[in-house]
Image 1 (cartoon, rainbow, N blue to C red):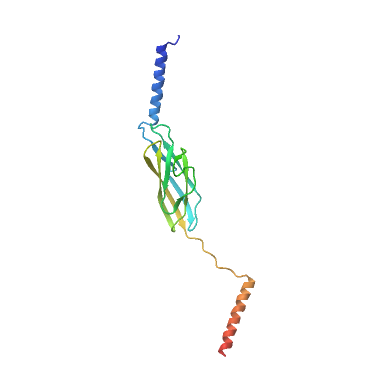
Image 2 (image 1 turned 90 degrees about the horizontal axis):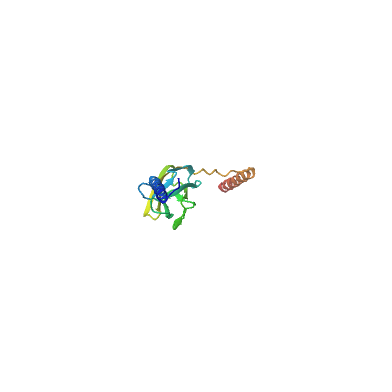
Length: 174
């Protein structure tokens, strides 16, 4: 059987229909989304005055039916005790998709602390979209500073000074 124009046109129409059906299954509503992974970061125990190692959130946008523009103007709002630290998401302008944001925990008080990271970005030309991730960590008391120790020479000097002061006080009283 030799293909004719009507068979080729029918085959193309079936292929285009199948492709458009598969695209529609991938994103049925056409609305861009912003996904943050993981959905929670736990920083464990950190002493007051110290900071944790950076943990990273991955920020990824899905386009809906908006085309192939990238993420833009990625920002993060963090509660007290957490700070942004590195990552591949710039705070303004175009960002790679996906990109990362580093977060460190510097506890402000002793005890369990919880918060929420709010990440906002323009996804594929959309209005800004916000997504969140839970944050947790525990502040530990700062390590106690040991009293200075006296070596043998320092101890002898202290005893000698004490005796000299004592002798001076005794002499003045007589």
